[in-house]
Image (cartoon, rainbow, N blue to C red; front, side, top):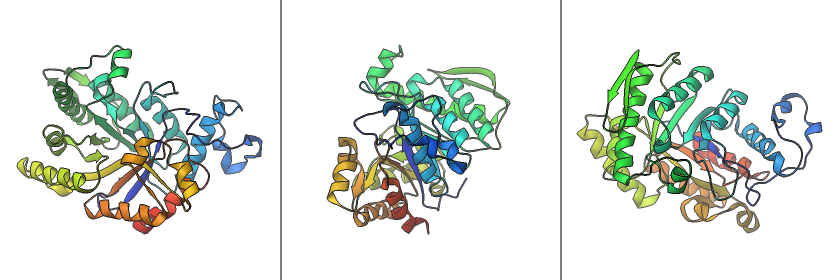
Length: 331
């Protein structure tokens, strides 16, 4: 894995087909030969809706060799749209892209048994030769917890569960037999073999200043949040204090940003590419120069990794433009 001083980028896959936001190429699979053959869709056919997989592969092919990673968000349902399970989809696409690192953005711990999740992550780490980044948070989407039969306790309880879960991860990734007795989770001599060349990177997502950030300072390799500007800086200042209180060198914690992201050279391109309110209100978007200034601002405040969510399968030229802008910061 790279050092925390490098500026790096990744693309966040859409969780499934969204006909209102995805861009689909015409069905020209018969023209794909040679190195393009890996982009052929797997179980799908040729209708517009069935070409989602081919669109994902086209986008992944665009970032291979340009960016460091790809990411799956973790939800079971979202409105009436398709929604793939994160770890299953991640493992499938990671097998197709052996030079990309892969991560979860971020798992909701409330419906992720800690021991099983540690096992799944270390399995992917082993099979990919060390390319797994396990991102996890307390979980927030109440409807999917209840729809799938999982409890949805108070925020304080979910955060307490998160702290226990990440301790179980740490134990199961390094100890021959892991035992942990917590209030919410327990494991007893849990054997986790085989292990990869090193433990997965542990990334904790969330910006809660009283409870989540102290957990980040204690246990995380990476921290992830969507904040910008003064909100970002305030949280970083808190993390510095928490690291100092725990005797940790703050420079060992990598600061990362996730959010909606797009750029356009014309207003017409921006009108098409700013696909939803999440991107519009919380994301990074604008002309190439505007986009670059927003990235530079976060870098100046310590961010070294960006996970860009285009909020659907990007149209031709969209990822390419983001890659071109990113080259200003990657050399």
